Image (cartoon, rainbow, N blue to C red):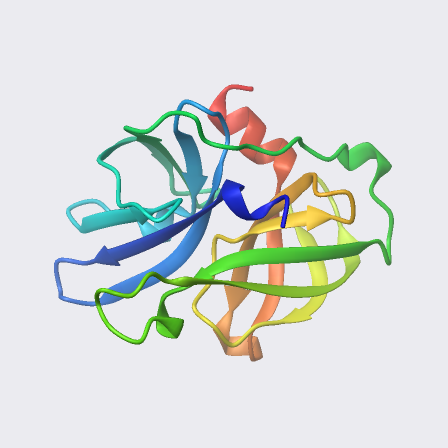
Length: 179
């Protein structure tokens, strides 16, 4: 429950009409968030959902190599989470992801629901964290947390491998965001 307020829903309609859905992470209480760059392609129509609202926003920058996008929501008073220390990360450490599931909405007026999945870290380095988690829902970009609720990374779901979840490590996110 403590990490739910730090999760942002991302919904995008691309120029070709494709609908992309996923999640992001609140970095600062004044509305700075990070999500996956492939959820926020240039020229698309975006919306971000947090705390029952769809606030206005500005896309600040994208890093297509590391698949990150930095966004400023026009909303304050948001809850953020601390960052895990990747130097202390261990194999088989328990982790969990929390994402926004738009498919759980029964209509366009119903708010999306949060969803959770858990597992362990199976491999990691400074560029990638691998887990034993598999996810079928469209929740890429969901924050990955350690057992104490600190952010370990931002998830990427590989549909080709049946939904295997890996994560962009928090150290890359921090560097990208200037922290």
